[in-house]
Each structure stands twice: as structure tokens, then as C-alpha cells.
Length: 99
Image 1 (cartoon, rainbow, N blue to C red):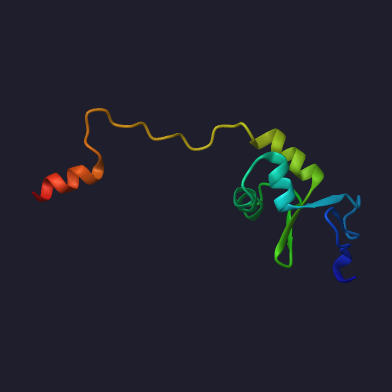
Image 2: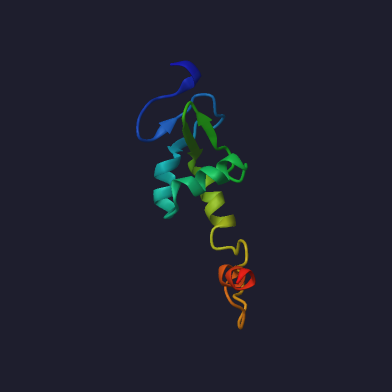
């Protein structure tokens, strides 16, 4: 097959040096308990080592997924905005200003 792909639920590529197991991103996301869109964004940003898109399908190597899980999951991302106590919600302020 072109590109060395072997179809199936768990894919292997012939062109990787170690011939490691490649996992479809949707399966990897389910294994990690994440939305597939979240994991796809991380792959596009280069945060999952060895992730690549083959046609319309993202695949990730098991080793890259393990590394991503160990290094990135459970770490704080953006801080949640603190609600301003005593302030009316933005929409309510806008309505009050126009009245």
C-alpha cells in the first residue's frame, strides 16, 4: 500500500524507524477520557510527538500518547476567570447604561 499503511483499528506504519503502533486519534482520545477535538488540537499544535494526519484521519504513536499523558495531562492550563463580586453581569451593565 502507498505510504506503508495497514488498515485496521490499530495501524502500523512501515516508514517509522521502530515500526511502532499508531492509534487513531479518536481511540486515543477515548483512552485518555478527552474529546477527540481536544486531542486533534494538541496534535495540530505539535504537542503530541509523532502525531500525523494520514488523509482525513489523525494517528498518534502509542509512545507519543504516553508521553503527552505523562507530561501534559493534569497540569493547569488557563486559569479560570474569577467572578467579580459586587458587579452586575456584563449584559446587565449594558442594559443599565442604555436606560
